[in-house]
Length: 228
Ligand SMILES: N[C@@H](CCC(=O)N[C@@H](CS)C(=O)NCC(=O)O)C(=O)O
Image 1: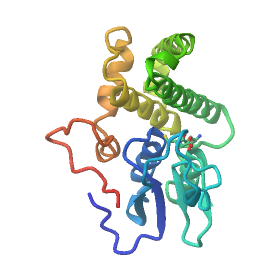
Image 2: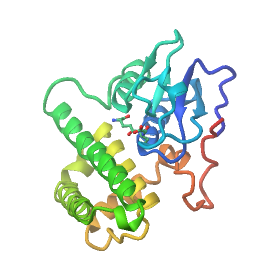
Image 3: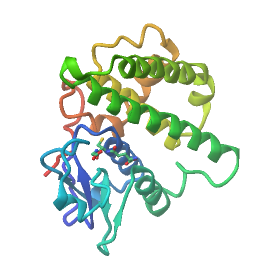
Image 4: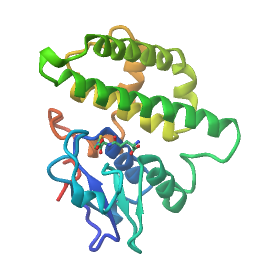
């Protein structure tokens, strides 16, 4: 689906490899707001080591996702954007009002988003020349990944029974990014309930449309959303 809306009134800055951008895309598809969004790729892609002064005039943090609203104001980070989309277009389902459902959704969201942060930092360290990598940092991230997956696995009965919320979207985007950038890790054999949940969740239209750029195409999937 290539943004069929004739003149989208919002601009989403991002790219096809960021899990935080994917979280916004999934929320945008789920809330029916994707068609009102033009997707603008930030080039070269932002990394911690490549600041982009021009882009910092749009978002002082120099990070994606960044959403430009119809009146020209900008929103960041992914949670502010997702809550905006949820309340403006989605009826406020994904960030429930104060109460146990809200804290549960926000807790799972924090788990998924924290896991994405950890994977990004781990990848940054892993991509350094071997002689300057910190082995204790690498092993610390490896341990954190196991503990995050174990936590998700232990809560899977409650996760799969709960109404769809921002926590599910975050955790699915974490697992998608894990497959995208750490395809060498076989996490499924140790975390079978999580693997089964993700297999099913991954079939949602919102997940199909937002697959990461280099993910192998799945023949039956619709074409991915297009970045300009
Ligand atoms: N907490 C932020 C994290 C966003 C983030 O880390 N984005 C990465 C791309 S995945 C980025 O823009 N990195 C550039 C940088 O760190 O300077 C959010 O939820 O939006």
